[in-house]
Image (tube, rainbow, N blue to C red; front, top):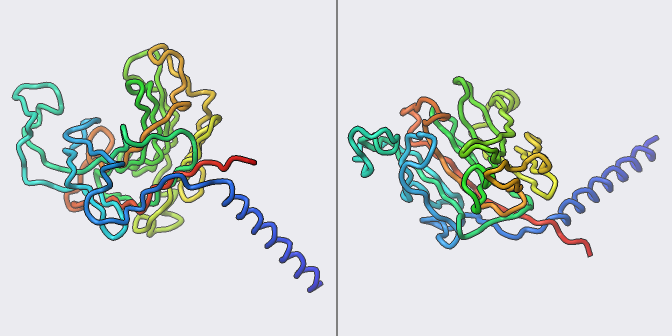
Length: 288
C-alpha cells in the first residue's frame, strides 16, 4: 500500500511538473515595464493625458501625479487647494469649462502612438485604492476609429454601483449610433473577494487578459471573470461592420475620482495611491 501511494505521488508530481513546464513554454515575454527607475515613467513608452478627460470625473490629469519609486509606478490622486481651471467659461454648459476651479488632480498614462498590441497574454500586478470616489482602471483602446467603434477592453475597473463597491471586467464596441456602445460587462461585488480575504485591499493582485483570434478572457488572480467571444464583437454601420478586436490596441493606466461612476469622494482617503508593480506582455511561442 505504501509503495502504491509513493508511486501515485510521484506520478501526480510528474503530471504537475509537465503541466507547469508546458505552460511556461507556451508563452514568451515580448515586452514589459518593471518600473525599476526613479522619477517619471519611460517617455519612450508612456504619454500623459492632460486636463479634464471624460465621464465628468473630478480630477484634472497632469504628469506630476505619476512617478516611479521603489520599483513601482505610483499614480496619486490628490485633493488640491482650489486652483483656477484654465478652461473656465462663465455660463458654459460643457462640464469641462463650467468648473471654475480644479479641486482634485491625478494621472493617466497611455502608450498611444508609442506601443500597440495585438493578441497575447497581458499581466498587470497592482494594488488599487478602494476609498470613496476611487475609480482605478487598466484598459485598452484601438486607435483607428472613434469610440466605441475603436473597441475598448477594461481589464480592470473598480467603482461603486448604487453605493456598493464592484470590480468590473468589460469590453465594448460600436453600433449604429455615434458614441453609443454595445457592452459585454461583468460586475463582481467586491465582497466576492473580501469575504475570502478581509485584507484583500492591502495586497497586490494580478489582472490578466488572454486575447486571441477567438476570444478575450479576463482574469483576476487566475479566476476567470469574463469571456468575450470575438464572433460577437462586430461594429455597427458607423464602424463599417468591422471587428475592432482584430486590430492593435494601446494601453491606459489611470486613477480617476468621482464622475459618473466614481461616486462621492471621501477626502479623508486623500491622497489615494494606485501602485503598479509591473506590466508584462507575452505572445504564444510558435510551434516548430
